[in-house]
Length: 269
Image (cartoon, rainbow, N blue to C red; front, side, top):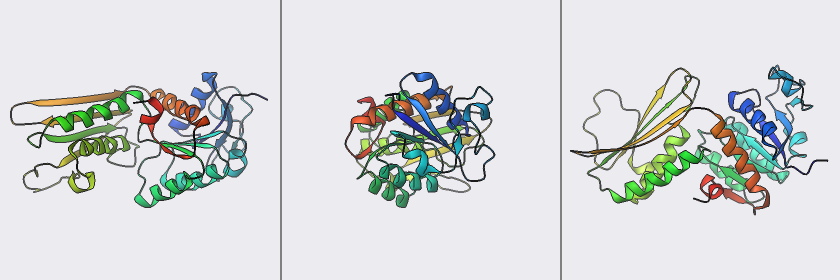
């Protein structure tokens, strides 16, 4: 029996799911012990390697999370809010580290995840890449250094299949900017502008979302004053940056006490 941590990938047929399967298989630091999909999916009962168009790897796709979580040390989850909340409870019962990259979570979803974190390690982040998490820290510092003469706008772009907006990363950046200014994002958030909106309100943090083609993920934080502008930018060229970050989080969480963590904790930022 291998001593490498066993990991389950949820939503295994999706773009991120397949990237995670490949990343784990190539890592030499962990082993894939489960591939999960929704009931009725065409891949159920098939070897995940063959389903992805490659060689068999002796891991069958299943729709039973209880069975696969029981033999896992970690679960990596980039799915949908309702599924993620259910997985959080089941992963906690199995005492498996639950790495959550799912976005679009509501306050009720977050409360349920926080409750599960009392029993197991949960690492949740809107973005798992090192570069983005450095950008979050920089955004906080720049926002703290500049007054409200500088308007803050967060512009994000993603592929045309992304279902939520603003992106989870954009919201992370908005929270960082708000924290830097000592305010709550909910009080100053400005998004979805359309029509005769009137002048921009001083101190607000604006959001703009672009959707098109196969854009992996671009994020700009613009600080704009009367005579000068500062732009902080991160561009993801390949989803492997997210998969590698998620695997790093799964491994990092193995010896941690139950609780909810983020990538700032994982990366020591």
